[in-house]
Length: 180
Image 1: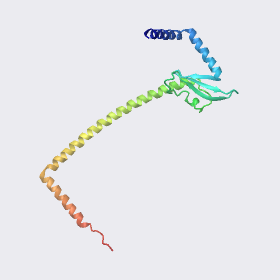
Image 2 (image 1 turned 45 degrees about the vertical axis):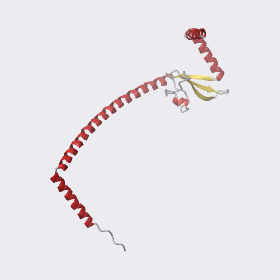
Image 3 (image 1 turned 90 degrees about the vertical axis):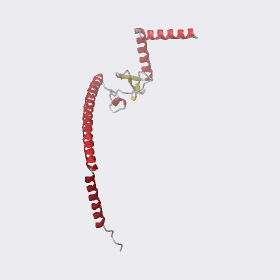
Image 4 (image 1 turned 60 degrees about the vertical axis):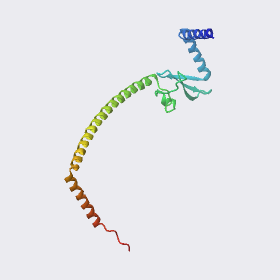
């Protein structure tokens, strides 16, 4: 079994070495062109991740569906939005290479502005938290002073007497309505 595994590893190494030759690249391109003719489709573009976008045609020459061929079948995540409008038929013609490059430049600027905005928001939040911390300390200090003030027995007795008198006067003033 060990010798079979070694043979398999050698086969894989030869296969990888062969894939990097010019002859194999020409063969792969020719094979792809034949497949495109067989399926009656045209490759309209390729994004920066290596995914290819195809336009299929009917036998009468009318465009039918639009499709993505992912570079890696295991990862089918579409993060590139350059062909998004064309793919979902919001525009009729696929974007040209100049439009795709312009989109990528605008996207880089958008990401840069977003990073700057995030940094600015982070600074503002830190300043806010610092201010809140200072105010909380001030409130705690004022609360402790108030608590110390209330603990003074003479002042506390006077405050409670005043509050009791106030409650009694409010109770005397309020009379329930008589039933008719």
